[in-house]
Image (cartoon, rainbow, N blue to C red; front, side):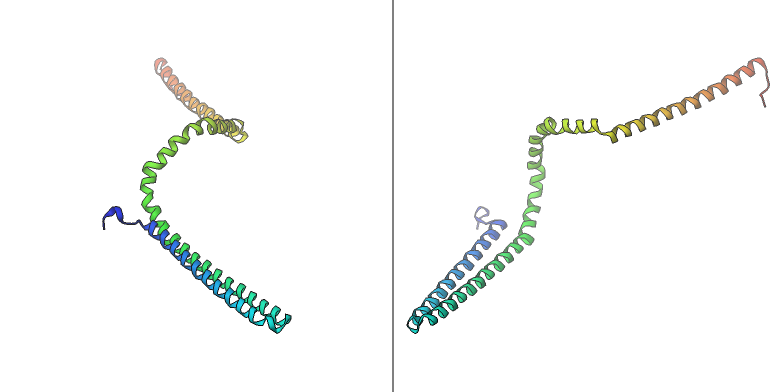
Length: 181
């Protein structure tokens, strides 16, 4: 069988799920038809026995029909849930893992390129406006500005003190003065 004729794992899983659902649906439909036929036969046989017998048989047939329908639906649901669980735990992770390189190398860059102009046009101005109006940001900038000014003043004090010490030392050397104690 050539590669082009082979079904992929997701196609096989989906096909299996559809076949299972069709099989259960046909079984439930046949079961319901047989149940309805049995109920009708029961009702037809009891008509002559009187109104009470007819009513009782009809009620029994309807209850049986509903009970069997409910059992069939329950079976259908459990089969479908089992198939979905299997697909979710077995097939979907494989498909996602197989698609991930393609998505990250081809699809996501195109999506980002397509979305970026709208982000720049609509989102960035809103973010900037929110930041400009943010009291917390203003306080943070003020605090950082104070810290920068305090650091600069400290550096200036240290530089000025060092320069003063050098001037004093030079002055004492020129005039041959002894160091003050």
